[in-house]
Length: 626
Image (cartoon, rainbow, N blue to C red; front, side):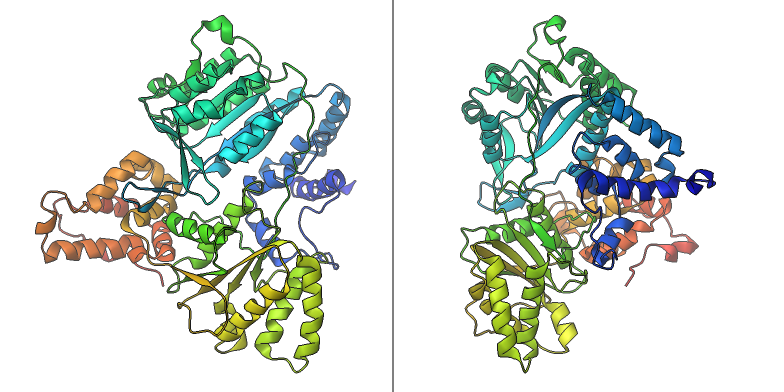
């Protein structure tokens, strides 16, 4: 009761949210050990708590429980939590009184962000990645607004692959489908299981979706040039399709504003036509959309049969059968949870994923290169890529990162056994044989017929054991793979040097990591400058304008006069490369970007313009932070 008399009770709201989460799910919000201490990894998660992690946790809460209340209680910013306990009590009472009147529906969202494509000359080239965390958070927030009316729409996220589209058509689990991905006038960009683009042309798409109109009521193709895709779905029998003209590109912010308003209105039981018009108005009214009326006109509603045809409800129009959407989750231990943007590494990610494929004969992938190039972030992103696609190959049972500073839990016995097994071999323990015999049995008992991905940071082992451990670690891993009896197992090694000579039979594939290329470094810089600066300089806030800036700063070799540049030009180029982009070293580039000023940005975007005499404070220019 004392909580009611505190000057502010919002910090206590978090604690109540953690308790309520446990009561609703039977699970702790964060991992704790037997002494009820939160482990190091989850402490980091608390410090970096964001909407993506919150929504990941809330997805485990059954819709019969107060998910909307939990969402407000577990806000990171205390000022966004309920201001008084009366709000909590009222919401719980409302949940209880409305429980018999709640209506349900479901939407399946396909998200396709292939890493690379194969050029006509057979080179593997990168594709720009899409921010699906932002989209997922936005969609859940928009649909959550309808919960106040007792209207619940479940969101099922699917990998944008043909295998998952086939599963969707077989299960017929939703009458509403949303696709997000890259747009093209000639093909849809889906993913294959290794992260390469799968181009689906119109004729192939029409064959693929034959019969989908038997259950699908509405499809939204959130991609540029998507009118032909929408028409293909309409021709397949889908009554309604939202898309964009073939000849037009959409601003990202316009797509976000439209999608948020569109699904919020549908979930609040507005008709399709009404929701469509509200969404176009949201684009026009947005202060962030340039040429807003023109952008709003780019959204199409097919087929063109007059307004009355589309003036129908989409959600809650017919009963929807409840399903258990709990894909088999990969258990991961020790994987760093970095939220840093990874730029310019798509080809490397694809190379690693290809070697992790069950069809690959490679046992281990060695990711190596000088320090500070982001090797840990790269491997962590590969792990996250797999974790975000639980229904798609390789569908691992375990991802273990060694060594880990996280505390062990009762259900981490396999991780503990593998860690001890490797340590015993490296240390050459006097009781080695007895210990290894027990550990072999423990590992084989749990890992039998399972699929494992094991990551070993060799730099940490060398630091911990004060010496060269490469061959010993190789021997340990080689023996481990043999005794585990796993159905499928792969290894990633992180080091600063390429593989040394080893007597083991471990088949390694090297993946060298080097500095970023110029385009990637500029892109990373643009994403890391302070938000207020980025909004003031469109050159760093628009994809098309950023491309122009890159071509201005680093003209292509075929540009007129490129080969005529003298030594002074190249000296200026090197100065810019070092001062602003840290010579392509990601950590240095980020440090420089975080502390630039307006003056610095002005200097950068006019770098090759006629030079004005430097001011006395020119030494205040960004410098590399070691």
